[in-house]
Image (tube, rainbow, N blue to C red; front, side):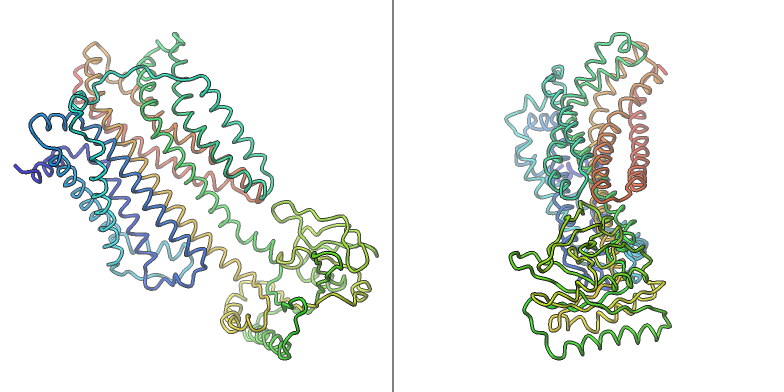
Amino acid sequence: MNIKQFAINNISRNIKAYVGYLASIVISSALLFSFIMFTSHPDLEISQFPDYLKEGLKMSKIIAYLFLFFFVFYSVSIFLKSRYKEFGILYITGISKQQVMKLIFIENIIINIASSVIGVIIGLVFSKIFLVIMSTFLELSPLKFYIPINAILSTLFYFIILAILTSVFASFIVKENQVLRLLKGTKTPKPEPKTSLVFVILSICLFVIAYYSAVTSTDQYTTYLRLVPVTSLTILATYLFFSQFSVFFLKKLKLNKRFYRKNTNMLWISNLIYKVKDNARIFFLIAITSAVAFTAIGTVYSFWKDVKRQINLIYPNTMYYSTMTLHNDTKKPDSKEKDTERMRFIESELKKENVDYTRINGEFKTVFPKKSDFNVRIMKESKYLEIIKTIGVNPISFEDNESISLLSSSLPGDKKVKENVVIGNKSLRIVKQVEECVMPAYYDNMYVVKDNFYDSIKSKFIVDRFTTFEVADSSKTTEICRQFENKFNDESGMQPYLFFSKELMIENGKLTYSTFMFLAIFIGMIFFVTTSSFLYNKFYMDCQVDKKKYEQLNKLGMTYNEIKKASTIEIGIVFLLPYVVAVIHSIFALTALRNSFDIEVASSAVLVMGSLFLVQIVYFLIVRNNYLKEIRLNLVNF
């Protein structure tokens, strides 16, 4: 029998040891294939996406690649270490290091190719459903089924390269001069895990500081400023929690003799002390990646659900058009004619579609102070009153020598305005700022003044004219606004202007958040599948050791039901503890989001975390059932 036959027999006869690794690569390859198939679809005009969305797609693919590399390397290192005894016996029987490396290489190639082929087939089978879901989700035209040769080749190529690299990586793990250690394998007695009280206290302190910083972030600036420090503290605290605090807590339970000696508590507590310590890095990885996935999906979903309200806050007008005059700029003679042509186009299209509308023409001045670079925009009170009447906002009254700010106080973040503003040679007291936007939030330094004061400004200013169209049902203007942009967009460089359409903003916002949600879910599923595979591999290896232990305890009189109870508690804590930590991290992160952006996150958090919790419970029940089946095979006393 040659090395190739030996590798094939090793996989086929020991399939249970490989099933977690195989399943994770199958699902990962199916997800990767579906992602490439969707983004490479001939009917999907990625080129029309904004640059930040195209960059987001590229970054998501890179993140998926890198994480899969890391996952496979880490899984292989754990899996190979579980086979120390097997490799030790092979070395003693005369096999060379080159032959062992060849064996590992063939195994990896077979597993990766077989798994990726199965993953591609699964992706193809469900591709039509996937494309329909994504078209609906992103509100695109239905994408037709096609044979994605590029996606198939890219997926297979990626996993073949992965197999080659992991085989090279294996040479650093399995070494011929460590035969004695390989033969002892996992039988080497483990010393009792040690903990440091200093690190235990430090982990608690770091959590308190990180969580307090998160919940006290009340504006966007503070949140951005604290993002890196809080994330770093949370990561460090999480590692110390699993490597120090959790073991310390279990050892304290062990000292409580009354609780420790009750029923099967002695068994699962003693087992968990070693398992939590041994798996601290895996738990840490699962907790952090899950927290990232929960927070990312919850954040994007919250913004996606709230996009219409956000746009209405920022852009109160159904359609807004304004000239853009630069300081000391002389406008071209035909500028007014072009402005008139654009407005005439909108009106003709509205009339053609039988859409009732209200048109308001106005202007504002940008005033440049003498001794400052700070400029302010001012609008007449009469025009302000005319606009708010059409959009249904209550008016704010003010006296001479006073002004009101059009910077909305309802926008997220710190939006306080100055008490006074200098316009020309006169200082006006700001009596109030509007609660709702009257003009687009693009203008963050605009004030309303009395008409006579506005007319008295004679020097150092420029005038921009604007037109607003208000429609009762703004959704009827979507196609009109799209036609306007297609017709006049190329002219914006020659005669600068601003054009804002509420419906196009909402449409673009939904597309943006839908795309980011798709990317967040894709990355989150990659994280979930790979980290779940970590747990399965660890439980399979532990099961091989636990079978002998429980067989001996069973002969001493321990029943299957007692073993089942202890194992359920043990597996449940191992599965759910990283999840609970990830949920707590995400709750504080989403709280900071709510405080900073004034956005509702509770329903998003419940939906995202609740859905993944159900999936985790199902996975826990499957692993627990398989684990107990393996344990029960060797028992004699039920």
